[in-house]
Image 1 (cartoon, rainbow, N blue to C red):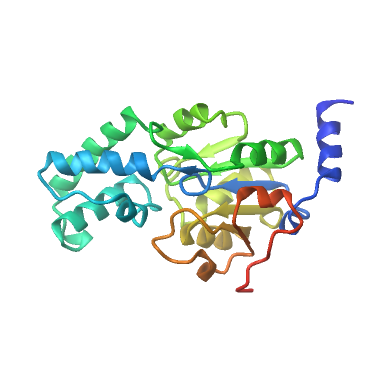
Image 2 (image 1 turned 90 degrees about the vertical axis):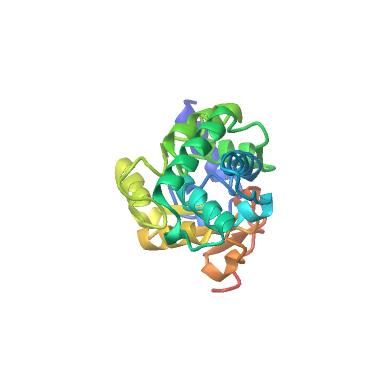
Length: 249
């Protein structure tokens, strides 16, 4: 039996969430979905703000600012430290703090970051069951490979897209439609898995089914308000027929 035949048998025998019926491609968010990265993001932001003599936030504050890429994270942190709207932050100051943040975070992107329970086992089980796995994150592309290699996830994904890989990032559907087109998979055979309203908005706009994790970062809002097709308390529920559908549907 060759590898493909083995995977086909695994797919036939494995109990999977009903959302995955007829699906071929699965796109996953990274921060707040696969990894808890806020400790390292917060540490880098604290150092960058402290360099400017500004007030520094708590990790809980930073968790509410994650989701739209590192530049937006820094802008929100600056706005908080200056007690001013984001659009009123000085561009020169913002650029300086952003450069410092990128340097600090790049030096230690996984010192405090942890992999959520069940993630590695679930991803490789889905891959072995025949699904095409794609990583779609708003994190800059330069940080993806070091994180995946550190957590031994680099062989799980067939394509990885960062927030600067294409002209637009989530919540725009472009990264998802690009991934589907890249592998020649129709949108109706794809699923977006994430933890934020931006993931759900991108998935819906792309015509993907959506699955939302109840943990992670969603600006302090319940992810159920984004009306995903399924709610998951753990990524491993994708491998179970007992996972619950979204109560908002």
